[in-house]
Image 1 (cartoon, rainbow, N blue to C red):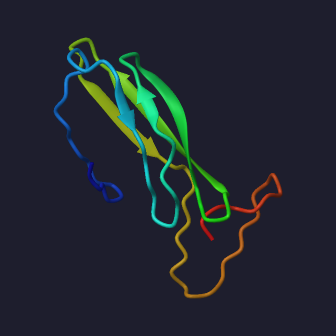
Image 2 (image 1 turned 180 degrees about the horizontal axis):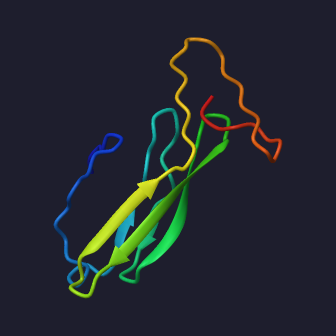
Image 3 (image 1 turned 120 degrees about the vertical axis):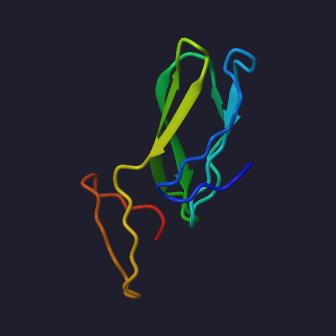
Length: 103
């Protein structure tokens, strides 16, 4: 368990060869915890979802890579993340017409 600030890297020294499956849950400010996601040894990209108090979703892409030596690298990113520091309401309409999460 631990917190990682934006742009920060966190290293956890666990070999994928010794622990082939890890579990990960993510929490973002103003959102609830994501569901528990199992990470298997195989490299792949998945999407985790966190929901705000109105059950609106924020998609977070998870890149899980394991090299030939069994070293796992996880990268999380969200392509659109808007932080409103104006103190005024900010309304954004997604192209699908639904409300955005995290208001």
